[in-house]
Length: 325
Image (cartoon, rainbow, N blue to C red):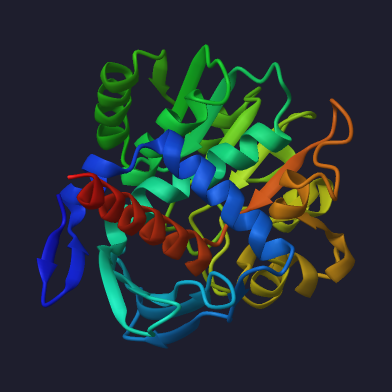
C-alpha cells in the first residue's frame, strides 16, 4: 500500500509492483498513446542536463487534458560503461482542479513495467499474428520485462538473448527460462540472436549500433527501446531505411531519436520516412503492418504521458479502494 506523507500519496517501488501488472500497464499505455496522438493530452519535449559521460538528468512534463491531472517525471539515467544503465527518479502528479501535488511515484519501477508494456502493445499492433520467436538484445532488467510482456501478446515458442558478457547472458537465459517457462537460449552474438527471429527487442545501453539491418529477415518486427537520446543509437541506418518506421511521438523522435537522426544525417531517409505514430495505429487512423513480408520498426523513447497515466491510475485506484473501505 502507498504511504501518505503530508497529504501526498507516495508509491515506493514495492507499492508500484504490488498494484501494477504488465497487462494493466499495457492498456493504460495504449490509451495514453492514442490520447497523445489525437491531441487530448499535452506534452513538451523533455530537457536534459548532462552530468558527465553516461550520466543525465531529464525533466519530462505533460498534462493529461484540460483540468485533468498534470505533472512531470524527474529521472536520472546513469550508464556504468559496462552496457548497463539505471533509471532513478520520481513521477509527480498534480490535481487538475486544485493545482496541488497529490501523488509521488517511484519512476524507476514505473519505467521497468510500463516500458515493456508499451513494447508489447506496439508488438501486438505491428508484428505478424503468427510471430512466435523473439530475440532480445540486452540482459538487464528491461530484458526480462520484455520477454514477459511480449509473451502476453504472442505465443512464443523460442527466445534468444544476447549480452556483451557471455557468462551474464547465460545466467540471464537460465533465469528467464525459470521465470517464464519459455525456451530461452543464450546466443553467442547479436547476429546469431536475431537470425530468423520474428520479433526483436533492443534494450541495451549501447551508444552505437549493435543491430544491423542486414541481419533482419523479411516480416520481422523490431522494437528499438534502449536508446533514449539523440547521441545514442542501437540500430544502423540500413534498418531504419528498410523498415516501415513507426514512432511513439513524432516531435520527440525528430529531436531525440538517435537511430532516425543518424539515418537522416546519412541522407538515407527524410522526415517523411516516419510512417505514423503508434497512437495513430492503435486508433485505426494509420495502418500498421501493410504486408507479411514488411519489416516494421517501433521507435520507443518513453514519454511523460505514459508515466503520468500510470501514476493517475495508481492514485485513482487507491482513492477508490479508500472510499470503499
